[in-house]
Length: 199
Image (tube, rainbow, N blue to C red; front, side, top):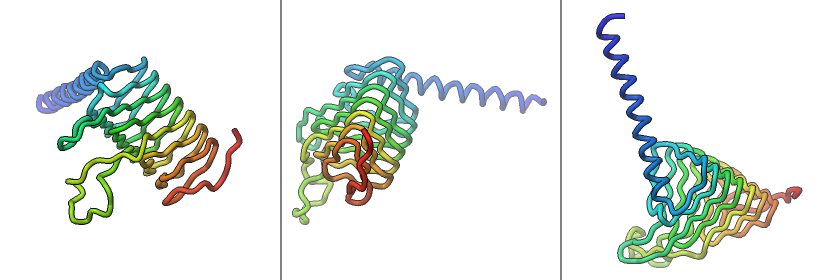
């Protein structure tokens, strides 16, 4: 191995170690700023976390890269008191987004596929076509509650004011706009119950 190869290898090792160190520091900063977080929690890098002081997270939490969790307390002069409560053993896969101005609760043992959106708000009423969406007030139809042992498939959207009962499955690419009873298989746009599962 020549000198150039040795130097290149050393630079690569330093770079990889530095990236890992930065990721650990970012996760440490997140853990310190969350109001409560259980042991054995892992947050992959990169991620975007805003309003961590409004989040309570149980033990054994894990996320893939690209997680975006936002508890919004101020939007263009609007003030909110957001709350995000996550139970034990909750797993987010890659590039999920959770947006809160009201309250979102996830129970224990919830498994969430990649590219899932969970939100309790939207940019105002649809009738105001004269106002750009970005300029409309944020509004919430109510809190989102996801029960224990729920599996949410890839690319699903869980919309404001929805309750998903324990043991339910939300199919990939579904848009959930209404409550889902416990132990239900729910799929489609908008999502409909196609089967009841054994409890």
